Length: 616
Image 1: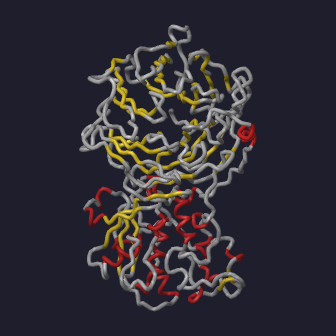
Image 2: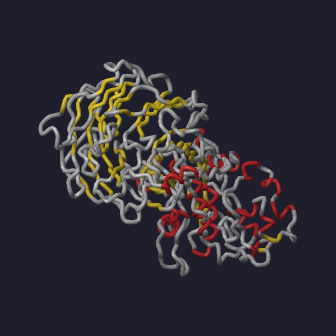
Image 3: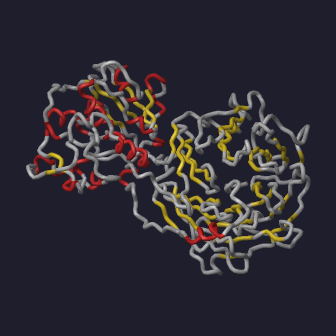
């Protein structure tokens, strides 16, 4: 079903009914300030290269700080750098040969006039956290420093980071990389006096002008005396307060666990589960979800849809494991190809009612459909219907959109065709074999022609009253106005039954960078509304009331809860919502970066509450 929780339970008990009242409203406080969001590398992809005549061992630098490897000479500790957070990806563009394609680049400079002694002046000379303005060269870097680089502005930002190849300087290398990733000195935080004793420090020690720059006053999380961004006590005027760890080189040679957690939060991949893998990231591939192996948990389907690629029309499935996590490709279609080329789009749903998710291909250019049913092994082994060719299905044109949902409540998903310009809607109910013929319901025949066809209106399918039949919601993305058309009788849609304005409900999810989804987050049998802010990564929830009907209102009163999660807000990140967790029907949040392949899941807590793991 379209963006709906799978197997969310049709019997609503007393306990689940009570969950509707659990709203856990959270104050709208930002966990990641705008100043830090500006400093993020696009998609968390960080290309780097060594300057010509680099002084040092390139392989050691690569292994110690970009490979999470243990190599000889790296003390007795594995050389795990910032990449251990699974939040960013370092690319040696010299090796890949594509440095020119990246507008932002890191130049690694080795042993640049550093005398090797551990003194304050030496470390000050080593720092290189400030980016260069567009067009600057390394030779002229002293004349064209800029205090901040806003990646979102399109400026060509170039960093030069001075690194040492010797393991004795692991702290300085990891520290400078932290600046390049977007972090300032930890001891410049305004709450430092609660953690370190600065009674022996003077203004000169603290470099007061740097503290007065607004951009340098942005921090996330709690103070960390063991952060690699914290100056060690040996070379400075301060020490830790009684009872707190002493800040030394020994305990912050590498990013601390809290450093890594903050990096995950900054780049929008903080979750209950994370994976760094190249899955479903090449051109033309799209990610879908469904329960393909009938184990009660949502799986992931990757489909290559665009012509011109070697894998055109192929499919890969990653079955969810017992923990609700994903381990990589479990099954692939091999040479079998399905649903690729211009005008074709793949949709997932259980069309034959066997509890396994199938796929349908709609060609809006020709006006046709074909179906591939999942077999008993949870595999899609080729087109099943029609046996030859495609089935002519008059839902065509650039404005024709197919939506999936069980509108007549028979346990089989149906097809709804909506023309976003004319507002005409037509439904084709799946037969007992999961096949489709002609339209069974037509809004033009019923006398209700135009619906959800005004500018900024978007159609969303969900079961908003908990009666096991899919309803239609029309959402205005600019005003937050909502309309609901509930299904009646045999799955017919009669027109608007509920209007948020008429009912006096608050408007919800409007404006730039906001996307609305429908899913059952609190496991009460009715689909709720989830609004995701793609810029800051926040989530707002409007809980539906399964006890309501069209005469009494939808129970969608506006925002019931706000969660500043800083989740899934990278440039090419895509949010999917489904019941990924085991043993519950609550809809969870899965973020997939279509460029890097990173995945992260935030599991919904009882009552539909979302929380960031607190380690940052």
